[in-house]
Length: 183
Image (tube, rainbow, N blue to C red; front, side):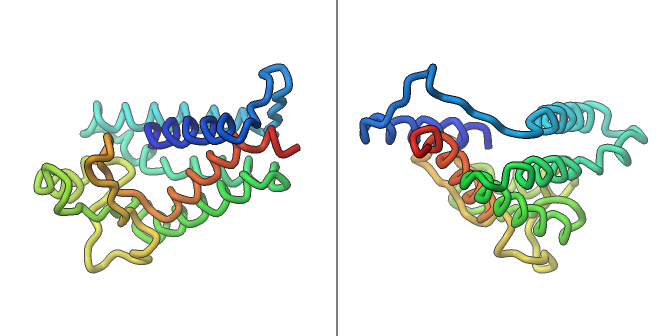
């Protein structure tokens, strides 16, 4: 989702420029309580992904299956900063994704769309449990509407499937960049 965060950030900054609302860098004061928790959670997530892919036959996998704990960090930080409009969007997106993940064996089910390339390879990859955080969307999937079911297809440069929660998170990123001009 990193490419989408970067793209939405650029669009938000361009929007500021078009509206002639670009703040001076010295005027931007971003205060996010508990941001250190997010940094620590991101590092843990990155390490868990690396270890999962490199030590597949290890007992470590039992510990790595707790990767979803990053959501607790997201909940803590969004609640600490809930007075900020963009944090409400981030909280909503986090909650929607968390519901989908908790309801489906702590993995986000993904609809593998026929319009994306290598659909069979992606299905097999998800079916065999090679992905730490995703699984294949099936008839048994709970809360399908909250899962990764929205396809961003070509000509989008990074084709993938995202969720309603991801859209809320991206709207929160857009609002984050707009906030310095609204104060």
